[in-house]
Image (cartoon, rainbow, N blue to C red):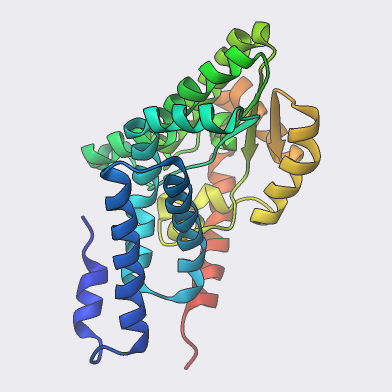
Length: 295
């Protein structure tokens, strides 16, 4: 575990207002999670999940170090745990509210690294969050959709679901699995009038992308023209995926075509890898320069 955040806290001046706010927010988060673990009603689960989502995005701008560490390292596990531990609560919620029309699996985790340098714990973490959490969500809600003869499952994959990206091997493995699973259940649920869509975006400007700036292994992530925004994904989901229910969507389409080319012709794609890595490293250095404090 990386304890740099803790060492940084020890070097800081005496506790100030933002430090107290940091401690308070983390305490509230832990309290909400303990309420979930003790077993709560569906409404309380929804409140806890909403709090997690707010903290996930808010931690980026609040500059709360403890919260940032907690969100980056534990958020995906919390989503996975809620799905697995509270299946009965989810079913009771379905019975209470009558029906659910759309399931979106959006949790994700990524830590770059070359295969000969990987920590064994990272293998489980990538698969638990990116793959197994998604599978359990589809399994639980899929039963409900099949019974009501309608529904739409939207799984968020990645262009890494199509193209093998050196330096992100565990993420690629987990997202390849997501694509294979999604295409399989699309066939299984079609007779029950349930639609399944896989959305595969390029790099999105989130804390997960911010993390990759400091990893040379993740250079190819930055080889595209620009990072997508959350609003870009939202627009595609609302304007294209939910109304039309396509089987697969890549964002943007041009990068999706390149990713599919890498799948069909892996040998040729490997020869182009150094060029994409070079482009990505230049952008990483530019981003680091922007982030560096001005003298």
